[in-house]
Picture 1 (cartoon, rainbow, N blue to C red):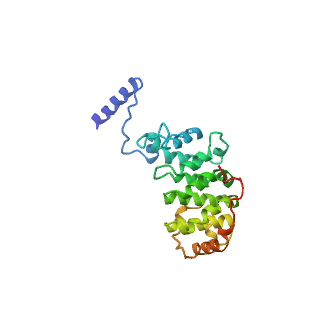
Picture 2: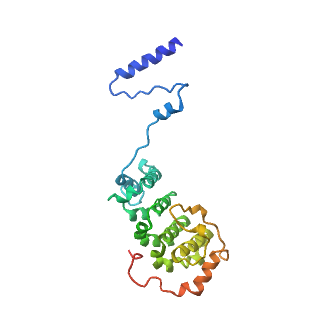
Picture 3: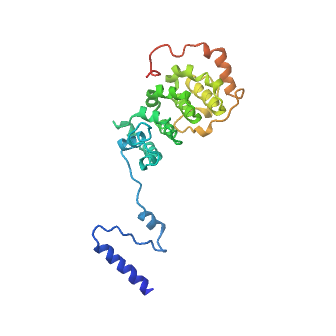
Length: 245
C-alpha cells in the first residue's frame, strides 16, 4: 500500500512539473458517479453557423465531403443540437431552412433525421422549402419520400398546390407506408377526414407511427376513392406560388 501511494505521489509531482502536461491519473475504484461525470469532457457545443457547415459537409459536391471524416460523423449530433436550440435558432441569420430541407436527401442513411428538426420549426418556415420537398416526392428512397410527404402535410393548406404531386403516389408507390403517408399528408392539407385524428401532423409527429395501410384499407382506400372521383380533376397548381422554386 505504501508503495502504491508513493507511486501516485511521484506521478502527481511529475504532472505538476512538466509544462503543458495533460497526464491524467486513473480514477480510483472508490470514485463516485459524480466524480466520473466531472472527469468526462463535455460534448462540444456549436453555433448555428458551425452546425450548418457540418450539415453542408455531407453534400457530395462539398469540398469537405468525406464519409470517413470526423465532420461527416458529427452530422447527427449537429442536428440534435440544432433541434435543442429552437426557437433561438430561428432568429439566427446563419440558419438556412432550404439547406436543411435539401439535406433530407443527402446520400447517407441518417439524412432523414433533418426532417425531425424541420418538424420542430413552425409550419410557416417549412413552407418556404416546398419546392425541395416536392422534388423529393420522386426520390428512390422511401424514407425520403415519407418525410417529404409528412412535412408537406405539416405545412397544411399552404401546400394545397402540391396536392397534384401527392395524389398519384396513393397508387404508384410500391411501399405501403409511403402510400399511407400520402393519405395522411392529403388529409392534413385538405381536411377531408381520410385519417383518424391521431394522424394530425404536429411537431411531435413520429414517422414510425405511419402504418402499412393497404391500398384498399381503412384510410388509404378512402383517399384513393376521393382522388378518382374528385381530386384528380382539379388543377392544384394554377399559378406561381410557394410551390415554385
